[in-house]
Each structure stands twice: as structure tokens, then as C-alpha cells.
Length: 626
Image (cartoon, rainbow, N blue to C red; front, side, top):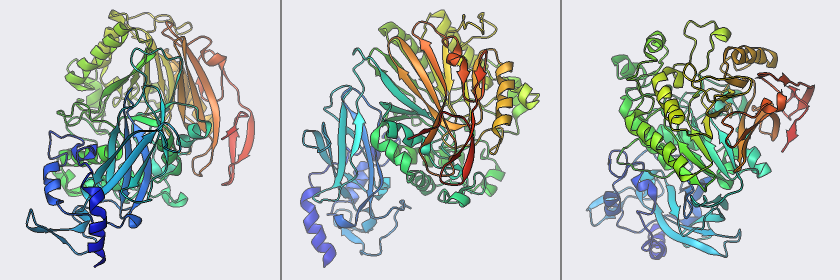
């Protein structure tokens, strides 16, 4: 009789809840039923009361917020009977199937809805509530909840919390912040910028450090939030208790859900999501390595792919990955008539426009798949090659033009891959000196972008990049077309800040020594005129602090990621003056703590630091404990 009693007690709360307000029922595309969920069918199937005991439900993976607008923000959580993810139509042994009189069929209780309440307030005690509501979640969307909180004021801090309807079962308390209005005067905004968090390679300490400092307003993630590999392929997760689940190359919808869920158990990642609104975009590994419009490096719809890679077509795998990503990330739908669109923009007052590109999944031409490097080298300058597809490219140029015309001081462009030319031949002895999986493989597309900036006199451009697992800071230059003075920066149209990985290893070797890494950095910096600073050694992140007069980029390196700790080292600081369109000279004040600085020096003070997991050698005296 217990299940029937629960049915009656929970019915009153549920009847006033809303299906459509949970955005995940129509994510990632309400116009593509194969990618989204038909709410009509879900409602018809669930025309009965919920049997769930609120005390047995759990907020399994924290809370999150993201994609802030001046009057709204996206809120996220997951509440379910188990921390495991939905495998589709799995029954729960504690309850018998229920009979739905409308559909005249028995339905698994695991498909029954869960009613969730949310509150958004101006104070931590949630006394001054500005928005609230009741919504459903269910196994159809892996028990995730994603709602748009509305009626908010611009550039304001809010606190929010979820709870199971008519119960004291509550989520942690979250903090978020709206964006300013596009025409607001804003004096300063801080961003923390991340990429490439590979779970078995270490702990995500970098996510937690801005939380401990409370140093930024928003978090930008440029992709590779997860990796699709099995543990044995990359990393040493076994030795540090970080095995990504499921422990296989992920292919199915369940696989991607489970992998995202595993990553979302990292305490520093949870803390970052809880304290800051995120603006994320995917790179390639959210789906697979080196993805492009028609395939990826290990799965190209060949017969061998179906035999050795799990028997799955490229489009099916991508559909699984995209659906799970939208379920788990605090991200808005844009114009989802185009089912892979994630590119979008944000106006942060008059201060800057943030333009988030998709240079991986949307519509790019064939990339370097390891076996075709020579071929891609030959066609890398072909005018017909596109990195982002014509629709996104035209949108991008229109965004740049609109931003300049409206008078925004800065244009900040989130691009997964390094924009500037990087000649690696001196370091690698490679006959194909460029990375053809980055903008270097799509040189006509890059030239069109630079042409638009130069010809329309659009300045104050700041490109951001991840992907490379290394740090690169460059003036933004149209080599071969515009004159450029590497000593003064004259001729540049902006700057590029590319960041290292949260944990993913150095591309020149996971266990590379500091001395060897700095030698490689010197070779790279020497071979590229516009490259002003390069560092290979440190995992970490950087912060941008943006004002109407100047923008500063502060790079932080982590001495170790194989234990959870709050150590970080300020390894380099850069300034860009508004209207300067280049890095301020002397670059980084003439001194950095690691890597190689053009026209400057590296100051190293040898010391040992005990991080709690053995003694680690750190070549730096400016170690901060957060």
C-alpha cells in the first residue's frame, strides 16, 4: 500500500507543475524530435501521480547557472532516485509498473515524473524572492532540470535553490549574476577562462581557485569539458582514483551522460558551477577527437569503424553527445532550427561583446585526422575550405561589425583553437610545420576574418583559445598582408590569449621537465614573430580583468594536479590598452615566471613545495596558497 499512499500525498504538488519550463525537454532542438523529447508524448505517458518518496530522492551533482542575460539566467540541477544515469526504460525494483488509463498501458515507475521547485532571491536566506516555480523532470532527460530564471535586474547577484516539491529535500545554495544591459556603463568585469579538463590526468584544482579568491564575475569554458577516451588510452586515473566512467570509449547516450556525471563529481568543478555563471562552448572531445562536419579521427562511417569502434554511425554518436551535453550544461537554446548550433553572443554593457564560436562541430571542412596530414597541408590554403560554415561565418562578421558600430569598447572572441599562426618546425623538425587542426589548417577562413577587421577598421579585438594544452600570447597580425613590428606591436589589430589545460597534458610530453619545456618554448617563440610569450610546462587557467581603459590577462600555473590542493603560481601578466590593438610594451612587464618571453626574461627561484602528496619541485618563489 505504501506506493499508493505516496501517490495521493504528492498529487497536489504535481498538478501545478510545468513540463515545458524545463528546457531540457526541448533541448537541444525542439524542431528535431530525434534530438529532443516530445513533451506531448511524455505528458500523455505520465498522466498519473508520482510514486516517488521525496526523502529518497537526491540532488546528485550539485547545481549550476549559465548564459546570463540582463533579465534572466539559466539554472541547472539533477534530482533523481540514483546517482547513476538513465539507460532508457530501466525499471525500479522497489515499485511495480503502473497502469496509465489514457494510454491503456503499463509504464515503468522509473519514467514517472519528479516535481521540483526553485527559488531565486536577492539574499542568501531566500527571503526576497524574485522568481520561483514548479517544474517536472524524469528519466527521459536523465532527471536533469534546466530552467530560465526571469524577472531579474541587470548586473545583479542572485542566490537560488532547488527543492523536491512539498518537502525539505533541498539542493545546495547557488550564487549567480546577470549580465548588464547592452547600453550600461560598466567599470570592470572579471572572467576566468578554461579549457581541456581531462579527468584521469588530475584534479580540477584550477576551477576552485577563483572560487577561493572570489576573483571573477563569470566563467568562460572554451571546450573539452569532458574527454571521450577510455581510461587505458590516456591518463593515469587508476593511480589517483580518477577513472572516468564508463571505463570505455563512450558512444551511447548513456555513455555520454555517465561521463558528464563522473566529471561533475569533482569538488572544485562543483564549486565553480555553484558560485559563478558559466558561458561554455564545446570543442571536439565533447563528441570525439578531431571532429569535423562529416566525421572524426577514429570513426568515419567506414566498414572498419563499425567493426572496431562499437558499431555506431558518426551522426548517431554525435546526436548522443549533443543531447547529453545540452541536458547537463547550463546553456540556452539559440535558434535551434539548426540542430548543432551552439555559437552565440553576449553584450556585457558598453564594455565588451563576447562572441562564442563553434570551430569544431558545426560545419567545418575536413581536418587533420592523423593519417591525412600531408593532404590537409596541401589544401590548407584552399579558398573553399571553411572552419565554421558560411552561415556562422557571416553571422560572425556581422557580430563584429555591429559591436563596433554600437560602440562596445572590446570584442572578445571565444574560439576553441589557436587563431594565430604557430610554426612548430623548429621545435618538432616537422615537414608540415603547422597544426592543421587549428586555424592554420583553414588559412583562407582566417584571412577573411583578418580582412574584415582591417578593412572595416575594427579594433580592440581579443581572441581567446584553448585546445592546445599550452599557453600562447600573441599580437593579432595579418602576416604577409600588413606590416608588423614585433618589438613595438605596430601593425597589429588586436591580441590573442590562448590558455593551457585544466589537467590535459603538455603536447610535448606529459612528464616533461621544466627545463625541457622552456627550451621548446624558446624555439617556438623565436620561430613566430607575433608570438610574444609561450609556456608549455604548467597546467592552469587565466583571468581577464576588463575595464574601459585597459584589459589585463593574468596567467596562473598549478604546481601539481595529481592531488587536490589550492596551490597556484602567477606565471605571467599582460596588459592591453584600449585603442592600442597590441600587447602593452614591455610585454608582461619584461618578466615572466616560466616559458619564453620575447624581449624579456624568465625569473626562476628554485624551491621545493610539499603539496601533501609528496615533495614537488617548483621553479618559482611566488607560490600562492588559496
